[in-house]
Length: 111
Image 1 (tube, rainbow, N blue to C red):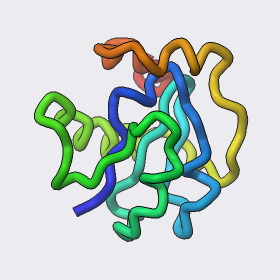
Image 2: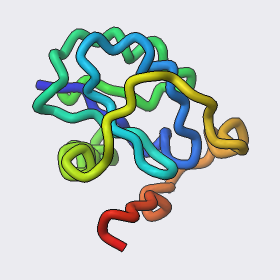
Image 3: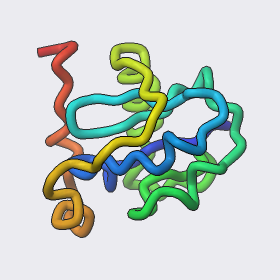
């Protein structure tokens, strides 16, 4: 099992989780973070750090978020590792309450 960043992160990109990760498993895209399942050691320290509850243990993913298992694995292979926390996106607070954001994931690697 691994941990998975879900749709709640899209357009928010809080990075509190990055600063506590002991193995540098987070990867950063323009408006979303993902976890590399091959690097994640399943420690779970990132989960309580996410201010919007966007990170789940794969076994506990809500059914409507199961596609994010593949999304995390695929994008982690394309995006650079992020090793330090930074500022969230400018309108993160507003976007945090919005659902159904999957189509907004920006991926310049495939553009």
